[in-house]
Image (cartoon, rainbow, N blue to C red; front, top):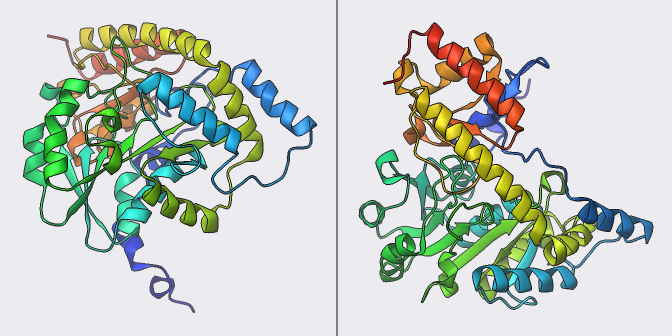
Length: 392
């Protein structure tokens, strides 16, 4: 009898299963309305799908260069320059990856040695901590608070820094809170970053989904380009989740090492997806604007309804999530979500899936249809009534 505990990596013992996926194992039945998975309800725009299909018809089914098609890397550079005033050499400072998630993994693995500390504002996306643990690094959560609209403040950043701090994750616009960091917010922390010789992993996958204010990349600010890896991709802005394509940009010395890992672990990103992405970057700006306008409508609707029900939340300025407090219910995040699913067939995600500081909140995704949103909120109202909760 094999003792598999002795076979498996000890580092895996420190990694909990994804709180999101763990919860979705409970899902069943066609009557469930899901405000859970962060996936656009839009289909990838036709002209982008057509470009992918055409590449197959032309027989472009071969491996691409490890870094990605040169034509795609050039379009990525052009896009980032016109959209966010970022300057990257497409030959040495861009690598195309299998989704933004691989880009995050590559960046952390390329920069973190055992014992190095990675500063992670929370609540935030679930992958940063386990990837850090797998490298032998130490994740250091920095709690953010609703009264600050879940922004990273200079005071909390300073308090978290030690001599072992090496990398700061900036997950803005933020999943799950919808928080953003404005240019003014970012300028308050750049001196701290430079003075402490920190590097930054800026996860900007939701950069096109901001409302009222245009996204500012920290890499565009003085002194930051040389110490920042920008991660982005096509899943959210272009409704291309299943195409699995992302990219990372940054100093050539770091991108070179990230490409080396990518070369041995993945080889190259999907060829068909790369041809589709070229079309998206060249001709997809109108698609982004149309989808963003629709998300904005849903955002205002769900915020108004949740606040009216007593599930208080600030109005998020980015991504497609709201993060309401469930204090009125008297339940833990997991109990609230489990009972809401069982009793009213509505799926939302426990806030503690995104770090311990998310306890007392739930994540609701408004990337579904207005009809589903409206019906889900009606069911949530019934659920609160069954608990004896009243707004105000």
